[in-house]
Image (cartoon, rainbow, N blue to C red):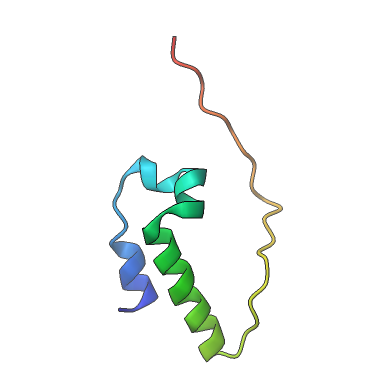
Length: 63
């Protein structure tokens, strides 16, 4: 299955987008493996992404 098609099948569910899910879920593990295979097919070395643009915004507590 192509990476694009695999990404389309990710559930539209906020739980899959948590930091924990991004690090440990089976879905994201499969996506990382497919992405790595794609990089290798283009002879691109794996490296850490530049995430300078990300800001963590904690959820407001619900009272």
